[in-house]
Image 1 (spheres, helix red, strand yellow):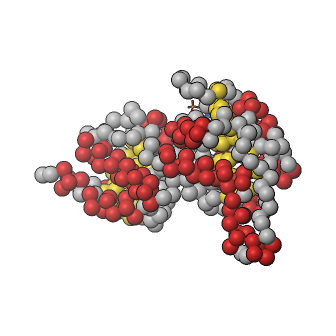
Image 2 (cartoon, rainbow, N blue to C red; image 1 turned 90 degrees about the vertical axis):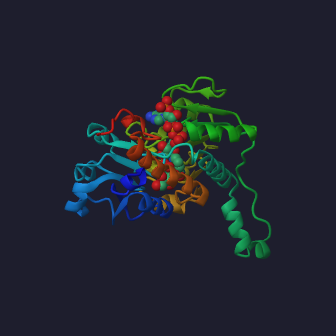
Length: 327
Ligand code: NAP
Ligand code: 8YV
């Protein structure tokens, strides 16, 4: 029997909202089982008996894992896996994989675009042209803020943080960062606390993962430390920000502007952030090009193929890296 014939007997559960390319590949290689959403109440007896893998955009909680006793692997679509209960997965010997590296440069490009949009007001300038204001009212007002002379702090100097830092270097801007651990060999100033970083810079870019340790880390104190000329950009996770404190800081002039690609309760964006004249907002499009989403889809599926054919994952998350295959 060939590997492909063996793989096509393996049931892989795919919730409805998923990448078309990944779903097509799963359908060709495995026995794909579709489900409307990741709700344990929708798990049938047949799924319970047969499903050994999940491929998903959406979060997978403990109850979903418990509903599938033969589940061996969750192939999560995306590098951030805060919506997967990885400690429960590790406790149940379920492998979790993510999609690092293949999206790093795309997300760093988006972060830089969002930074410039926020500081130079380019989306509103384009609206000015398109709605005829240029003809009727003349030139668009000069931007109050500039990237020139800024110093940038990166909260989360990992793969994407480093790709952002390299771009900023080419812009001639000094870069500093905060992680829990200093990264050896980097030419950027390390700050052991986020507050220390915010005090030292006027532009803070967050690309930190969502987790208990980063929950609302960017709060009123951090924004106040950034100062009145401060610009905050978030391309990491909305959960890392106290959005109420951010809206107040923007309204009261504690900081000058914010650019946000991610929000605490997506797709719902707080009214105060939507209405603020000093925000630039994107609907979580950091990695959202066809090119990069295809590469993420391939890595997501390749993890399933590698697990079920060679019994090893390609890109396990650290929390489940030691999970062993069941046979
Ligand atoms: P990564 O390489 O794992 O980098 C994460 C960095 O954050 C690490 O350097 C880590 O360093 C630091 N960190 C983690 N917890 C921290 C804490 N409590 N305090 C301070 N620093 C902390 O991950 P990546 O590939 O760069 O991705 C980063 C995140 O970007 C993802 O998790 C995801 O949430 C987000 N993302 C967003 C989009 C989008 O579309 N907007 C796209 C892709 C990724 P230490 O462990 O030393 O603290
Ligand atoms: C995707 C992301 O939007 O990789 C991540 O962590 O946030 C984004 O690339 C998301 O994963 C799609 O589900």
